[in-house]
Length: 175
View 1 (cartoon, helix red, strand yellow):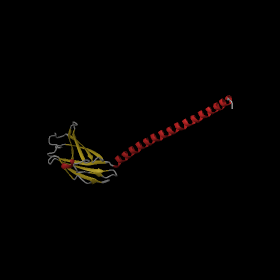
View 2: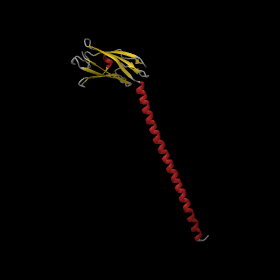
View 3: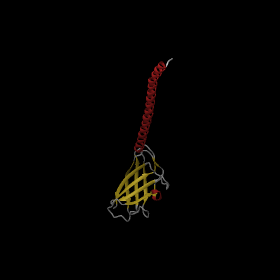
View 4: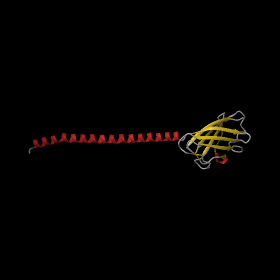
C-alpha cells in the first residue's frame, strides 16, 4: 500500500468513529435523563403519598366537644368529647409526653394557662374509641388554671391537644 491509499483508509475511519461517539454520547445523555426523571418522579410521588396519609389521619382522628359546663362554686369544668373519626384517640392522664394538654385563654386573648391536665383531671385516661364519647372533669381551684381571678362575663376559650392525635376547642362564659 502506498501513502495515498493509507491516507484514504484513515479518512474513511474517522467519520465512522465520530458517528459511533455521537451515538454513545446520545445514549448516555438519554440514560442520565431517564434516571433523573424517574428519581424526581419517585420523590414527587413519595411527597404526595405522605400528604395523603397525613390528610387521611387527620380526617380519621376528628374529635369535637359536644358540651361543657363550668361550676363556679366548685371551680370544676366538665367537658364532653365525641370522637367523630375512625381512629382511637388516647385520653392520656400521664404526665409524660405524649399527653393531653389544655390551653386556656380569656376574651382579651391572654393565656390563662397551658397545662398537662393529668394532675387535676377526673375521667382522664383510657381511649376515646371511634364514635364514642367521654366526659372529663377538671378541678381548677388552686391550679395554674384557676379562674377565680377572672371577672364574671369573661369568655374563656379552651383548646385541648389530645396526645398528639387530635385537637378540640370550645368556649364558655363565666357567670
